[in-house]
Length: 320
Image 1 (cartoon, rainbow, N blue to C red):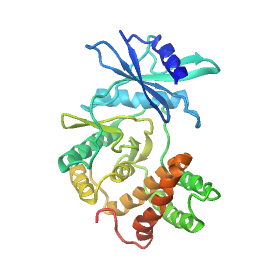
Image 2: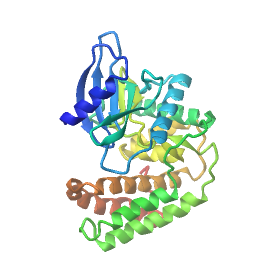
Image 3: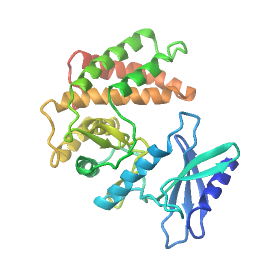
Image 4: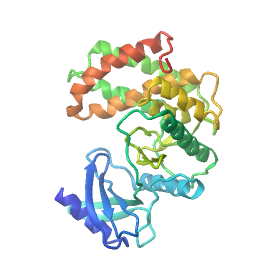
């Protein structure tokens, strides 16, 4: 961890943060620190975009921050506002050891607490309004030339399935279990292909707005961690959040969301399709970590029985 601290300290030399102290937060898709500044100055979230996985390009990182800038400017949402370096750049490149171009970003810290329980109906209503605001902005916002973010479409679903297939030799799941997931994925792929890519149903989404990626402060939900944002279906965004809500809260969410967003007649089937897609994406992500395999081996049969089998049989399951 000492190397990461030294990297962060080197990056801070290119910013104007008075009296800054570093608190290490952790490492996932990036290495993160909380930069504690003077009392009258908001703290900063500093990210070292360094991981063992496929590197994220500077253009992609910068595009994430461009959308955050637009959201900060155009909406009333409280979210991580990017901070530029002394050269007025959103992304700072530093050299450390053998790393010649380590990308670093800084955003204003968002105060609030994550929930360690199921949200109340009032909190779910607030969450739906938050997501509605993100989608309403996406529907009217024009990304600038060179804007680059991931695309969540059929290929994303099938790449998750391929990642799970690679785990068959390790015994993470049986061939029969994989076949069940594959059948569901193939059906979902057909649904995806049939959806028009219009402004009303497809645009820039957060894509990962679960209970660890929003905080509440004085009753207000605040979105954080936009590292997965990209082009996708708005209902996929909703389905991802539904992974962590009870059926009652899912219905409450839909009721609040539809006050500002019209849903297609087949929205429940679409949500169920995207719900399983979101689960497969999560399975694929976790399967890359052997420490997650024991839990996954218990969760996969449950998902097949509770969701995939019903989906393939045409039995509703999401709002029951």
